[in-house]
Image (tube, rainbow, N blue to C red; front, side, top):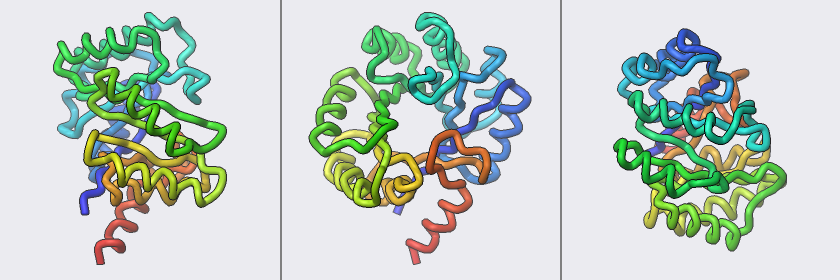
Amino acid sequence: MTSNICVSIQPKNNNEALTLIEKAEAAKADFIEIRLDNFETQNFCELAASTKIPLIATNKLPKERGNFTGTQTQRWQTLKAAAKSGFQYIDLDLTILKLKEYIIDLKELNVKTIVSFHKFDGAFTAKEMQRILKEENDSGADVCKIVGTAKQVQDNLVALNFVSENAAKVQLVCFCMGEQGKISRLLSPVFGAFFTFASLEQGSETALGQISINEMRTAYSLLRQ
């Protein structure tokens, strides 16, 4: 059973980022997502050179539960700077303007794209996820990410079933956020998801319902027994 874990961190500067990357390496993260919406500088080369773990850059707006308040052009410039600096993946929201144009630009830089869509006020139906997956795949995404919010435990079953049915077709990240969504966060890779997200440690969560990477590794070890 392969269970890839992406640790999400939200540093304010290079020094803090380097420290968190080192901790994520020690925790044996498979990917590291660096949230750039709080980042004070744009010297990303040092970060990319500091690790062999694939780095994902994302830059979230307030409506996406992020803190970036600049223009769309500034947002894109930050992400493109990360791509040029050696980040292996750039996360783009499905609703972003010029999405396909940005994806073409990133492919020319040999950088892969994660096209994502989040729902913060509830879970997706299977029909909604199928429509979103088609849109993401048609955009040229290398990885399709669909994340809703579980309001009840049963919402996880819909997400996990969707992963099971579609993970062989595309590289898919799909689970539920929220306290009720922890089951799908943990089990989505077991059902075929490309990776899932974890916090570096308790208290450093970047999204509701995140579990620490150490807790997830322990759970996966138990599942393998």
